[in-house]
Length: 284
Image 1 (tube, helix red, strand yellow):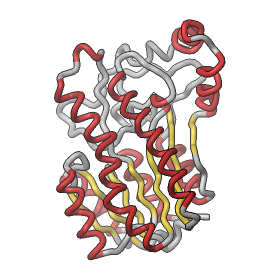
Image 2 (cartoon, rainbow, N blue to C red):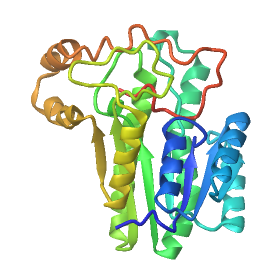
Image 3 (cartoon, one colour):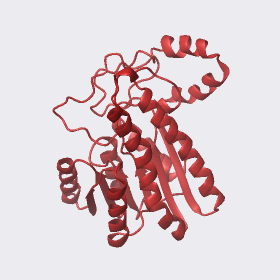
Image 4 (cartoon, rainbow, N blue to C red):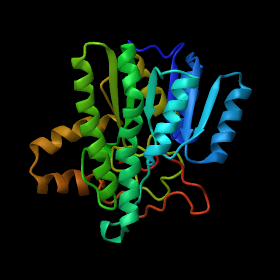
């Protein structure tokens, strides 16, 4: 089982939202060192000072995960100065909540660059060290949006479908090496971390509280969980998608459970506020 105690933990998008909470939770569970990557220098400095004031050992790097050069440079610094992380949380991500026809090409490219290529680039930079050491744990924060379609989330859903398929395939590759290497894929629904303004919770699908989902994620890491789906009803999505005809699924789950209308009034974080690299405010 993966031990958070005495580990080196790296969290992308770790200066806010559940990224910050996962980092703090690891420190509280005895992690030896926390490495935070984030695109926002102000929040990065703030959270670093906050954690250090509590006596924790924290390293901060301003990194845009969609920039491969920045990822490679930051990874090399981490490897030289700290060493290969024990646990990597691929948490950074963004969402654009509007109909596909209203997306600009830049909206599409940035979403895919951060949510897919960024996750892969970070893992590619750090995984060889884990394999050489023979141990490591990668946690990929995907989304329940990777399990079903949803209007006004087409590009985000596409990115999370990709993360889910890649993450599970990566797990199988690493398991074939027969080392102490693990992958946990997390598929939460909406999380109340500030950017979900206007979201309407689907029927029987409560908006998750950050502290609750964070604890579940860390528990899953410590027991080498393969997939974490939250809330409980998310477990039914693959089954219902498999057995129901598409039109019936649309009628029962999409419209009956109000999933397809959950983003109708989405506004997200106010424009004046910086948008952190954290997807878990607008997952579905």
